[in-house]
Length: 418
Image (cartoon, rainbow, N blue to C red; front, top):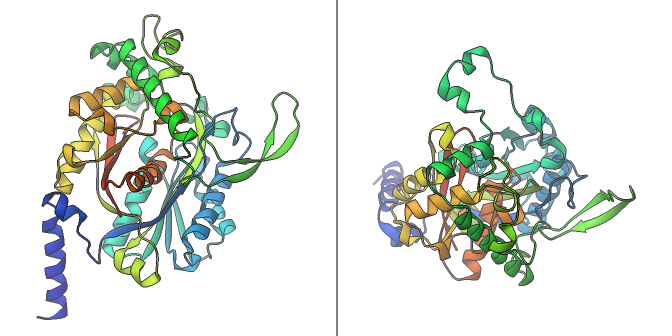
C-alpha cells in the first residue's frame, strides 16, 4: 500500500471511530488534537477586584508568559495565536499582537482576535484546533481575555441603522440580555425560588472548592498595580484567587435581593453572572507533535458545535448546542462525566440542564460564573482549564463545555482528559 493510501486509510478509520462511543472517543491517534497546557488568571470583580486597574492586554501577556514557562514550549514553535474578546476597541487586534511580543513570542508568531460574544474564548480554541487539523499550523494557542472594568458599559452596544431596526428579528438582537432572560424565565415558568437555589449552590460549590485549593493548579498568579479606591494609594499586589467567591450565600439570603429587570421578576445580581476581569490560554498541537516535542498531554479536543436560536431566546443556546456536539462525538449525555456550562443567568442554565435531562451533580462541580464571574471573552477558554483539571483530579475522562451566546446562539465542545 502506498504511503498516501495508508494515510487515507488511517484518517478514514479515525473519522469513523468518532461515532463509536466512549471506547472510540478515548482511543489515541497520532493526528488527535491535544492540549499540553491550559491555565488562567484568577477572575476578579469588575471595577472592584484585583485586576480593576490592569489592561486586558496586560492580563493576556501575563497568561502567555505563564503558558510558556509551565509548558516549556519553545515560543518560536508557536505559529498562530487566536484570542477571543468582546469589548476591546478594534477587536483587540493591535494590543493582543503586542501582548504576544511582550510575552516572548517572536515576530514570526501570528496573532488574531475574534468576537463571537460569550463563546469567543472557545471559538478561538476551535479555530486553532481546525487549523491544526487542516495542517495549516503545527502548534497554536487559543486564548480569551476581557477587562470589563475598563471596557464594559453603554459604549459596547452599537446603534442600529434603520435597515436593521426595521427587521423584527434583527432588532431583537440588541435587546439587553437581562430583559430577554427575565421574559424567557417568565414565559417558561422558571421560578425565582429555583433560580436562587441554583445560584446558591454555585456559590457553595465554589467556596468549598476554593477553600480546598482546587483552583490552585489552574490559576496563574499575576503581580499587578492596584489603586485603593478609598485612599487612592497605589500598591503592587499578587492576584491568585477568584475574588468574587463569597461564603455564606444561601437561597434565603439571595431571596432578599431586589429584582433587576421587573418588579415581580426573578433575575437579580445574586443569581446572574458577575461582571469580571480575567484571561486564559490553551496550548494545542497534534499528538504526534506533542510526543516529538516531549510535551505532556493533559487532554484531547474532540469536536465542537455552534448553533443559532431566536435572539429573544438567547439563553437556550446550550440546549441546542450540546446535543449537536454529543452527536458529532458519537456519545450520549450520560457518557459525559463533567459539564462546564456557563451560568450567564441561573434561569437559563437551570432550564437548559432540565430540558436536556442532565445530572445536576455533573454540572459545574466547582461552581460557575454566578459565583466567580464571566469575563466575556475569557470564559470559553477558562472553562477548558477548569474542566481538564477537575477531570484529572477525579480520575474521570469525558467533559463538555457550553455557553449561551449574545444575539441568540449556543456553542459546545467535547474533551477527553488524559
